[in-house]
Image 1 (cartoon, helix red, strand yellow):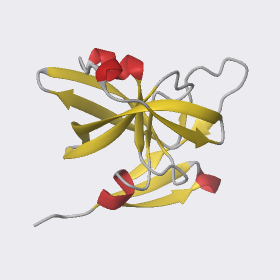
Image 2 (image 1 turned 120 degrees about the vertical axis):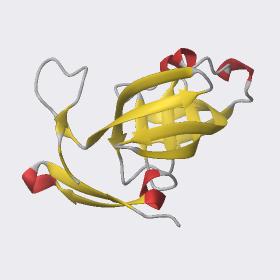
Image 3 (image 1 turned 45 degrees about the horizontal axis):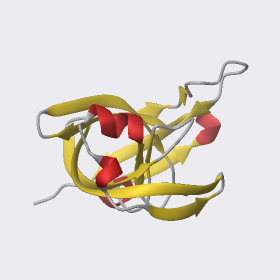
Image 4 (image 1 turned 90 degrees about the vertical axis):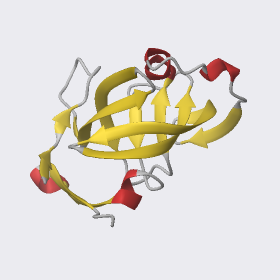
Length: 136
Protein backbone atom coordinates (compact mmCIF):
# COMPACT_ATOMS: atom_id res chain seq x y z
CA UNK A 1 0.00 0.00 0.00
CA UNK A 2 1.37 3.41 -0.99
CA UNK A 3 0.76 6.12 1.62
CA UNK A 4 1.28 9.81 0.84
CA UNK A 5 3.18 11.91 3.34
CA UNK A 6 0.85 14.04 5.48
CA UNK A 7 1.23 17.46 7.06
CA UNK A 8 2.47 17.33 10.63
CA UNK A 9 0.09 18.81 13.20
CA UNK A 10 1.13 21.70 15.43
CA UNK A 11 3.20 23.49 12.76
CA UNK A 12 1.47 26.82 12.13
CA UNK A 13 4.14 28.73 10.17
CA UNK A 14 4.76 26.19 7.40
CA UNK A 15 3.64 22.83 6.09
CA UNK A 16 5.95 19.98 7.06
CA UNK A 17 5.22 16.66 5.35
CA UNK A 18 6.08 13.39 7.09
CA UNK A 19 5.34 9.64 6.88
CA UNK A 20 2.25 9.23 9.07
CA UNK A 21 -0.06 6.23 9.47
CA UNK A 22 -3.53 6.10 10.97
CA UNK A 23 -3.48 3.86 14.02
CA UNK A 24 -6.03 2.75 16.58
CA UNK A 25 -4.88 1.63 20.02
CA UNK A 26 -7.00 -0.69 22.16
CA UNK A 27 -6.63 -1.29 25.87
CA UNK A 28 -9.52 -3.41 27.15
CA UNK A 29 -12.71 -1.50 26.36
CA UNK A 30 -10.84 1.75 25.64
CA UNK A 31 -9.84 2.83 22.12
CA UNK A 32 -7.92 5.81 20.79
CA UNK A 33 -7.32 6.68 17.13
CA UNK A 34 -4.50 8.95 16.03
CA UNK A 35 -1.65 9.21 13.55
CA UNK A 36 1.78 7.70 14.15
CA UNK A 37 5.04 9.00 12.76
CA UNK A 38 6.90 6.18 10.99
CA UNK A 39 10.50 6.77 12.10
CA UNK A 40 13.30 4.55 10.80
CA UNK A 41 15.65 6.15 13.35
CA UNK A 42 13.50 5.29 16.35
CA UNK A 43 14.30 2.12 18.25
CA UNK A 44 10.80 1.41 19.49
CA UNK A 45 7.25 2.63 19.78
CA UNK A 46 6.28 5.52 22.01
CA UNK A 47 3.05 7.27 22.87
CA UNK A 48 2.37 10.38 24.89
CA UNK A 49 0.79 10.42 28.33
CA UNK A 50 -2.26 12.04 26.69
CA UNK A 51 -2.88 8.86 24.68
CA UNK A 52 -2.14 6.67 27.70
CA UNK A 53 -4.68 8.63 29.75
CA UNK A 54 -7.32 8.22 27.02
CA UNK A 55 -6.68 4.46 27.13
CA UNK A 56 -6.98 4.40 30.95
CA UNK A 57 -3.37 3.26 31.36
CA UNK A 58 -2.12 4.16 34.83
CA UNK A 59 1.29 5.17 33.48
CA UNK A 60 2.25 7.12 36.60
CA UNK A 61 2.14 3.84 38.58
CA UNK A 62 4.67 2.19 36.20
CA UNK A 63 8.36 2.55 37.15
CA UNK A 64 10.22 5.38 35.40
CA UNK A 65 13.21 4.90 33.14
CA UNK A 66 15.31 7.64 31.58
CA UNK A 67 16.51 7.90 28.02
CA UNK A 68 18.19 10.15 25.50
CA UNK A 69 17.09 11.23 22.05
CA UNK A 70 18.08 13.88 19.58
CA UNK A 71 15.64 16.16 21.39
CA UNK A 72 17.32 15.64 24.75
CA UNK A 73 16.59 13.47 27.75
CA UNK A 74 13.17 12.06 28.55
CA UNK A 75 11.29 10.05 31.17
CA UNK A 76 9.33 7.00 30.06
CA UNK A 77 7.23 4.17 31.41
CA UNK A 78 7.19 0.73 29.68
CA UNK A 79 3.72 -0.71 28.99
CA UNK A 80 3.41 -4.20 27.51
CA UNK A 81 0.47 -5.68 25.66
CA UNK A 82 -1.11 -2.66 23.97
CA UNK A 83 -3.13 -3.68 20.94
CA UNK A 84 -2.75 -1.64 17.76
CA UNK A 85 -4.49 -1.69 14.39
CA UNK A 86 -3.17 -0.19 11.15
CA UNK A 87 -5.08 -0.74 7.91
CA UNK A 88 -6.85 -3.88 9.24
CA UNK A 89 -3.56 -5.34 10.55
CA UNK A 90 -3.82 -5.92 14.30
CA UNK A 91 -0.84 -6.63 16.55
CA UNK A 92 0.39 -6.17 20.12
CA UNK A 93 3.06 -3.68 21.07
CA UNK A 94 5.33 -2.93 23.96
CA UNK A 95 5.17 0.85 24.25
CA UNK A 96 7.20 3.51 25.93
CA UNK A 97 4.89 6.11 27.44
CA UNK A 98 6.84 9.34 27.15
CA UNK A 99 6.23 12.30 29.40
CA UNK A 100 5.92 15.59 27.48
CA UNK A 101 6.32 14.11 23.97
CA UNK A 102 5.74 16.78 21.32
CA UNK A 103 5.05 17.44 18.51
CA UNK A 104 4.68 13.69 17.91
CA UNK A 105 2.12 11.98 20.12
CA UNK A 106 2.96 8.56 18.68
CA UNK A 107 6.09 7.19 17.00
CA UNK A 108 6.59 3.72 15.53
CA UNK A 109 10.11 2.44 14.96
CA UNK A 110 12.42 -0.48 14.32
CA UNK A 111 11.42 -2.85 17.13
CA UNK A 112 7.70 -2.71 16.35
CA UNK A 113 6.34 -1.67 12.94
CA UNK A 114 9.56 -2.47 11.08
CA UNK A 115 9.40 -6.05 12.42
CA UNK A 116 5.90 -6.47 10.98
CA UNK A 117 6.19 -4.70 7.63
CA UNK A 118 8.53 -3.79 4.84
CA UNK A 119 8.65 -0.02 4.49
CA UNK A 120 10.08 1.79 1.49
CA UNK A 121 10.50 5.54 1.90
CA UNK A 122 10.30 7.67 -1.23
CA UNK A 123 10.72 11.15 0.21
CA UNK A 124 11.36 12.65 -3.22
CA UNK A 125 7.77 11.62 -4.06
CA UNK A 126 6.42 12.53 -0.58
CA UNK A 127 5.21 8.98 -0.07
CA UNK A 128 6.15 5.62 1.38
CA UNK A 129 5.07 2.06 0.76
CA UNK A 130 4.13 -0.33 3.53
CA UNK A 131 3.85 -4.08 2.94
CA UNK A 132 2.68 -6.05 5.98
CA UNK A 133 4.19 -9.49 6.51
CA UNK A 134 1.91 -12.51 6.34
CA UNK A 135 1.92 -14.68 9.44
CA UNK A 136 0.88 -18.34 9.29
